[in-house]
Amino acid sequence: MSTAAWLHGLDLAGVAVFAASGALAAGRKSLDLFGVFIIAAVTAIGGGTTRDLLLDRHPIFWLNDPAYLVTIVLAAGATVLVVRRRPAAASPGRPLLVADALGLALFTITGTRLACEAALPLPACALLGMMTGVLGGVFRDVLSGEVPLILRRDLYATAALAGSLSYLAAQGLPRPVPSLLGLGVVLLLRALAILRGWRLPIFRLPEEPR
Amino acid sequence: MSTAAWLHGLDLAGVAVFAASGALAAGRKSLDLFGVFIIAAVTAIGGGTTRDLLLDRHPIFWLNDPAYLVTIVLAAGATVLVVRRRPAAASPGRPLLVADALGLALFTITGTRLACEAALPLPACALLGMMTGVLGGVFRDVLSGEVPLILRRDLYATAALAGSLSYLAAQGLPRPVPSLLGLGVVLLLRALAILRGWRLPIFRLPEEPR
Amino acid sequence: MSTAAWLHGLDLAGVAVFAASGALAAGRKSLDLFGVFIIAAVTAIGGGTTRDLLLDRHPIFWLNDPAYLVTIVLAAGATVLVVRRRPAAASPGRPLLVADALGLALFTITGTRLACEAALPLPACALLGMMTGVLGGVFRDVLSGEVPLILRRDLYATAALAGSLSYLAAQGLPRPVPSLLGLGVVLLLRALAILRGWRLPIFRLPEEPR
Image (cartoon, rainbow over all chains, first blue to last red; front, side, top):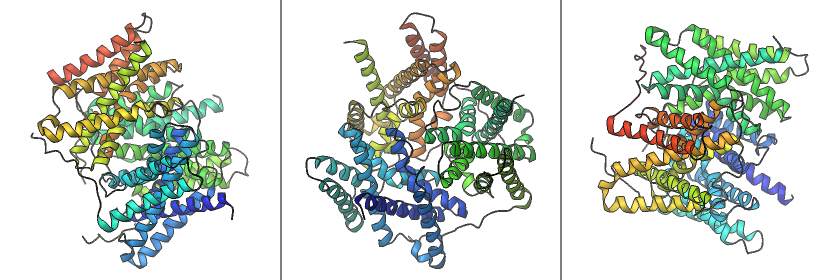
């Protein structure tokens, strides 16, 4: 298998994982089956779509490659079938968290790489990489009427940003060292967040008197 | 009247109807008059704007044609005036539902047609068509702080998708058969949903234990 | 200092002010420190980013100029530090309101000017100008799970629209009269809204019987 095919496969794996997480979120809101697919699609392609719009990359990555939409339908459908038989599988257990971390890592590094190839300054590369990783989940939460989890969860967007910055800092090294380093940093920070409960300090204001 | 003028007129009719539905939604949230116009505009042009951004069609359809914004202002203004005199008109009765179904059908088929003209694969054409039809309403609901109605309503996005797929399946037939078929499928499914209560199964997960 | 540098400085001042207002909004939601920066960034660049996407202006204004992201980080960081020491500073007092009005005025006129330079019809210029001014705050509220304040606040989006229209009406006059007039109208209406409580009538529908 060529490198390009391998990367495409990883990309589709990330899409599948995020589609499954979107389907689970939709299930908690009692949406109909079609709403489930919509939330799954938004979660899976929201981050990359925003990245492509901001970078003026056309056609948007999923428009010309049916594999993405097919993957989303299959992943969301499988999630619904599995959860209907075994509702316990819906609780976000270890497998889902591992897969979600992989998707976050892959999307973040892909986004950072594409921004670098567009010759943007480093802060913009880091921000675009992080956005590619986290925005799908943000859209999922906004559509479901939730305050985006990303905004208060344990080292989630922070893990994406750290991975993106590691990738950028290692640009002098031979390929594929920067990518592997970036992926590793995201996965490591997610593991620490999940296993050890690492998190950032909360910024809390007192209630406003009225 | 030429075909182009006729299509433009239908398009404006769809915009007017969606603007009125946005104004009604705003009225339920006690927004000020200006907020009413904003929600009306977002509902009316949100779907087509997203379609144009994703397809890289510039200028965005309403930027160069003042008729769209004028129509929105007139439709939202008329809605406010009518509802103030006869509040009973605000309950979403038969006329509004018929008009809304027409708008949904028109926008869905327009979006599918434009995606086809951009030579996209069929799944992307269907998704873009559906998005053109339903996204204005999604934005309206998100701005109003609601879980998008589209995601749980009776055969709404589903009707749009079915119409889009019918249009695509009939591409071999002479014009305007595909368009008429697509429009007819959307309207028929909406009629069944409204008159017979047709809906998709709900996908409901048990509450997570905490 | 050249005119361009002066305008760029004013633009950055607007970004800083909106970043601070985003950070304060995030503090009321008990987000973590990183969420604070995200909300600050969305508030500060959301309006201009949407404007650039709609006008097909690439690269998006902040992608190639690191000064914007640096300003956001500094302004949000300073806000957190100040508010931690003196929580009373978090109540939206006179200084913040003045600064926010300045940012609204500057972004509105910039957006209107760029739309005019793209030779759009007047209604589109006015709408794009207003959107540039207010959309950052709308995104901030949607991400925080609030009904956008802009939609019910006292003469906020209305002030932006009035400023944009004044700028357009004065196009025959020598520069920089139109800009100064537009800025002045926004600031005046905001002052009347804040000091005198000027607001538009509310459009309220009765609750729907169910």
